[in-house]
Image 1 (cartoon, rainbow, N blue to C red):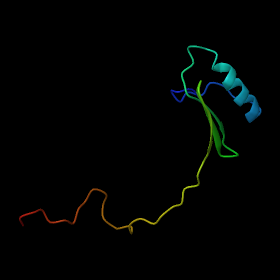
Image 2 (cartoon, rainbow, N blue to C red):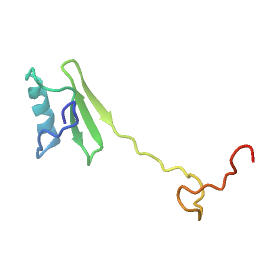
Image 3 (cartoon, rainbow, N blue to C red):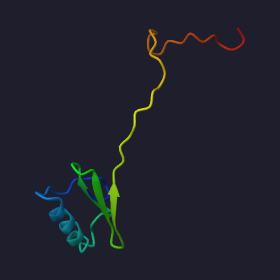
Image 4 (tube, rainbow, N blue to C red):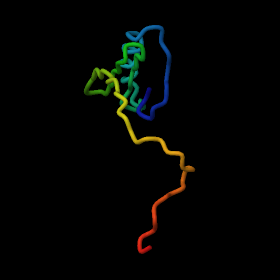
Length: 83
């Protein structure tokens, strides 16, 4: 992906995409940073002309929220102030 989040190409291997991204940096019109994602391995390379960062994705944990209610969405049982 380029710096606008647009997918630029698809590759058979993650390494091919990584090498391609470094070659693409030679293009002065490249919109940086370039990102190469491996969704199966849950990693991304974020590549600029100065750096090549390896980003390991985290696994988010679902944390309980509030209890469901039987109210109609948008309805409120709250009494307006002053009443």
